[in-house]
Length: 140
Image 1 (cartoon, helix red, strand yellow):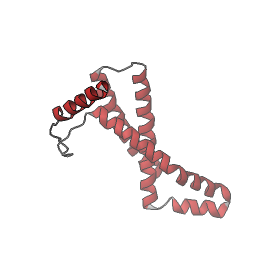
Image 2 (image 1 turned 180 degrees about the horizontal axis):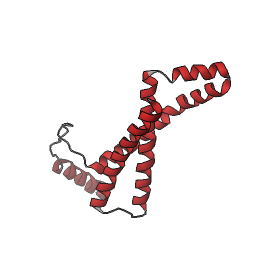
Image 3 (image 1 turned 90 degrees about the vertical axis):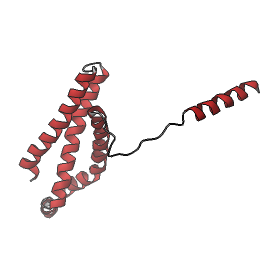
Image 4 (image 1 turned 90 degrees about the horizontal axis):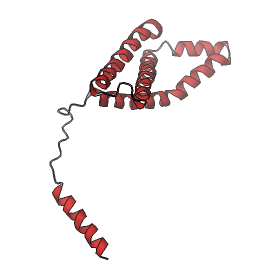
């Protein structure tokens, strides 16, 4: 019983001691570029996962017969579909580049703060630039 009383006192002490103000104004919180890259890596993975049914449906339509292929081609001419494909393209590029970066970090390549910051910035810029270039040529 003495153990539980000590734990309760310790818990109460910790709760009362840690009453710090919480600052959650999202407009004034500045995340480091490494955190932004990590968050974008997760978001791009979710986008890729959610785009799988659409891509499979397009593939099935294009392989069914000539009429379905024509419908798939018409569908790909829509503005919203092109924007979706551009977003999926960015997601794929960013997810692959950031994934390679994280794998290199796992084996202690580029682990220093400045190198990690620089590689995160490079991943974000290159993924966006490649998405614009490839999207301009292929999607639009």
